[in-house]
Length: 192
Image (cartoon, rainbow, N blue to C red; front, top):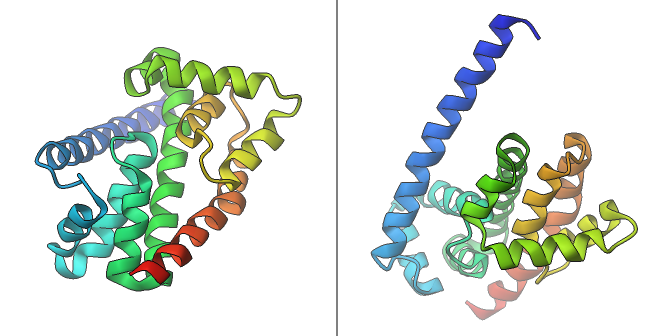
């Protein structure tokens, strides 16, 4: 890679990190102001943005996918209640998929020390131990993303740390991620 390409890559990374920091601060401030204490609180918060609500929900789900300070279930419930099953699903799917890719890229570029600043060490170690005890990590990762209640965030970071090929990683996210989110959207669609 030539010098110009390296400088351009650093510039884009710097811009991305500044935007990420700004969005993270925005999310954390809203969290501490009690905006995400329940799915109803989140729903009211997102609704307060009017027509920009779908973008706000997508951004929140993006952030929580790699900075897990609120349960993603709150986003599923809020999205379904505010925008219906299909539009709520799209906001959640796009947001969580983008956040999963960001988690991978953060881990790949900044390593274990950075990840341990975001995730509790116990949770990270449990995910690593679980994943490394399996014969085929790709299959384990695929099933974890497909099924509910797996340590998605930790495994997304771990995939970046072990340098899983980016194309394989994104393919797993695109193929496996929507099914669980769709199931939750359909479930919450019947509750609201």
